[in-house]
Image (tube, rainbow, N blue to C red; front, side, top):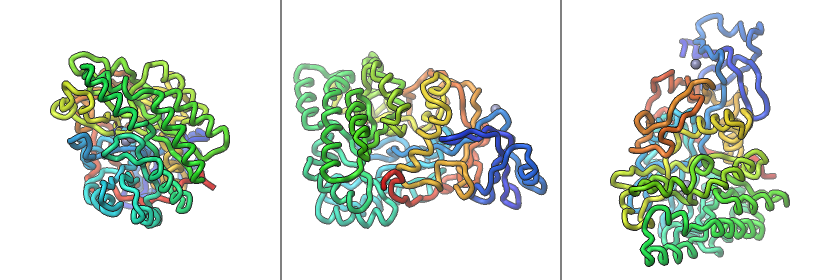
Length: 471
Ligand code: URP
Ligand code: ZN
Ligand code: ZN
Ligand code: ZN
């Protein structure tokens, strides 16, 4: 940053969800203050004086990524996800993501407030980039319902509920309905983990009793039908409540069909998928020597045919967000907890660092356009979760969360070079084209070529508005 706090990002192709233009971007302090056509008199005037100039020629200039689904320091499956807020947000920055929305957890018997306070304490003073919170609701009581209103006013405007994991996060239909009725009143967005956990637990028990203990059985018992059934039920409950619904980590074609039908009816029903469902499959779960454990997450990876449906839904907007569900557990000592019993493998995959590049690879591969890449990874998550227009777009007044992206840089994803605190990569050996070259978080350069130049504690908590898609 120059003495005047002015930075000009010059000569790049600025890409938004709707257009592309060769423009220079003026950053003053923490904000973007202007855009002007490259070479114009106005743009030229910015570089006189002592402004710092970042040469973006031959590069894309895009909004920093928004990963609306991460789990740092998340207690789960008898252990805790291996990225702290410090390591996880640093890795996110390396990957061109400048905001995460993580999940604070209400445990059974405690309040939403206690959960939120605990997560604030974990994150405060440690993050490389900005962060916000959803809250996982595990205990729907009268007090919880009242607390939801207070949290919405404080900027926690979305609540995740689980139809899976009985005895942990699970809520029955009555509890879900009551929380959705409250959300219909207070403007919150209900995020749903849509899998029929009661039925899944029966199939788990039967599989284990039959000696089926390998990781691949995780995928077999978490049947596609039990995802689509739960998705259907969640949609109907949301209709009864008159509330909006956002279904997280959608993996099965049949579940996409439920979402498509609801959206065709004009309902406020939205869907998210994750890179693991777009690039990985049950074949990974079947890797030998317990290697499949690296790919155990829920919803599970599906047969490869589902990928085409997911890509199509991302193009047609039946799915409108790609988040990572970043929830890393080391193979050594953590995934290994489930040797001999797939049900004890902690659920979750690493990916916060890989999302922007994998989706750019999808542009290269012809699955989505460049503008759709930005829409799915930056702009829609910002709008969906009340961060827009402060985040998710390159426009005057927005936070200067900007990535200068090299669309031609080739690299190979690997645990030996990634920055996430986890001992394997779900995408080990995958060659991708494109990577962030310079990353700014609120005007401050945090990634500069091959160096991390940010600091723990630069990242701030961002209170959120309600969903921008609701009327
Ligand atoms: O396997 C997963 N998805 N782990 C994280 C928790 C969740 O359900 O999102
Ligand atoms: Zn979930
Ligand atoms: Zn999750
Ligand atoms: Zn370059």
